[in-house]
Structure formats: C-alpha cells, structure tokens
Image (cartoon, rainbow over all chains, first blue to last red; front, side, top):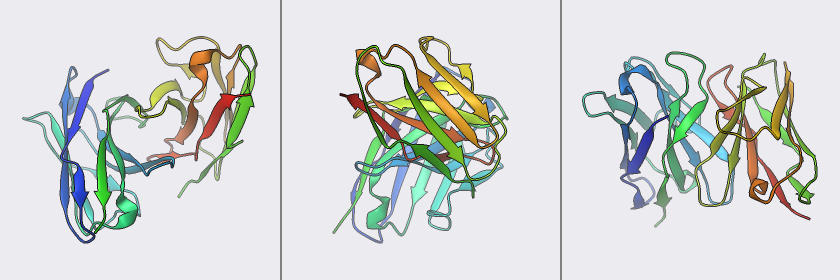
Length: 121
Length: 106
C-alpha cells in the first residue's frame, strides 16, 4: 500500500480553474498508474481520470474530457489534476487513488483522504 | 461505456444477518470486478478484487462471487462495523463504479 495526500481544493466560480495535487509516499511511485475519483455530495463514486506510471498514457471520463488534464512529476512523487472550465456539477470530494497492480488492470488499493472542490458563484 | 448497476440501493439488516448485494454489468467484464466499503467522511476501502479474492486484512465474513455480467458480495454474520455503503467497480475497461448500496440498521 501507500500513502496519498491531496491538496489544492477550495471554492471556485463557474468557468474558473483549479489544480489539485496528490503527494505519494511509501511505494515506488513510477511503477504505478494513478487516478482521480470524485464523489459529489451525497452521491456515489465516479472515476475521473488516470495516468500510467511513465505518464505516457492518460485517460478521462467523458464528463471531464477536454476540460481536465492529468499529469505527474515522478521526481516529486506527485500527480496533478488541472481542472478548467469548472461547472457546478464538478462540485465534489476528489480522491487520489493508486492502482494495485503495476501496469495491470486497475482497481485501487490506496486512497487519499479526499479534498473538496466547490464550484459556485 | 460499461454501466454497473447495484441492487438494492438500501438494505436494512441486523447484527448477525447474512446480506447479499448484487452488481450487474452492461456487458461481460470477465472477473474484473472489485468491491469497496465506504463509511461517511472516509475514503473507500478495498474489500475484494477479481470478483472473489479477499484483500489482505479483510475479515473472512466478506466474500464475492460471479463472472461475466453478474456478481454478488455477501457478508455473513453482519457486524456493527459493517454498516456502511458498498460499491462495485469494473476494471475491464478502465473504471466504472456502481451507484452504491447502503447497509443500515434495521
């Protein structure tokens, strides 16, 4: 397992931008794909985006494609989520989550504590 | 896109009960299914992967079964700590979660 700590959340106006960070420790960061999963207030879990260990492959849910960008800095053991053109429906707790298997099918064995993003005027 | 449908949405049970949650995929996902437990204000916790494999440290009263499009999570001898919301997740084609099943006290 590993340890994941998110930061960068907060209140932003519709149409605005925000960048989330997730600092990882206690595992070999470059070996594992990383993901962002969100949960709107009182709702279920929604996978948002994933990035391979090398950073060469990136994946997005249709709901955020073209607005959000995932990236990682393996020298800093950190994954990012740049969120642009934010909408009220992006309001959620955002979790950083680590793939269980290096380079394999992606279920998630370590999660951060979550960070709240609120989009409101 | 693969859709995941859980039933029921809410389940009322008592300590000691055996409970079963069902998860159906909109197309075959082989055994690429995980189950998570989530408590209010906390991150999800992995319980089961590849449909029936118990994650290390998870009590043996949790079990999973199924393949293809239909899967079940069973909790035998329900304990007070088990009242929570449970999610299935397919990982045949990236990741999709079910809508969740809340297990509450009868």
